[in-house]
Image (cartoon, rainbow, N blue to C red; front, side, top):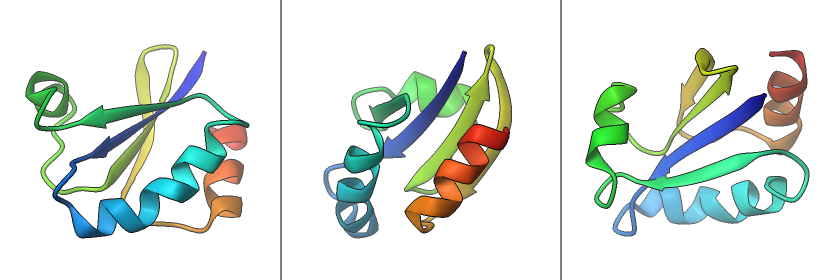
Amino acid sequence: MKQLLYFTAAWCGPCKKFRPLMENLSSQINVSFIDIDSNPGVAQTYGVRNIPTTILVKDGVEVSRFTGSKPAQQILESYHNG
């Protein structure tokens, strides 16, 4: 099973700009929104130091990650090819 883990925070300006795109993608692919303030242990487990960070996980194993934003098409391609 594939899943995008989207690490974010309410106070993060870039996260606020990128969130609508990720919410739109969540209707097409499996996206979990993880607030680092509410879930610091999950962020620590994945070694998230900057936000927004998006990690593609397949069968419980990290396949790829990126920090910041990307165009929707690149995210979809990475998801389907990962």
